[in-house]
Length: 67
Image (tube, rainbow, N blue to C red):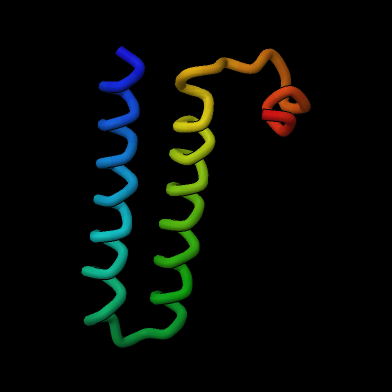
């Protein structure tokens, strides 16, 4: 089950990057580009944090940082 979750989360991270590039390249507004990149970075950060907790589920944030 953990391996399946890692595959799904990894695929979602790749999809987020693909959507980001598909939206940013044709976009004319620099402000829109910055906001799109920031949103995608936040989404990927959340997915990366979840990905790191799939195998080992820490009980606290401090324990997660030690991993």
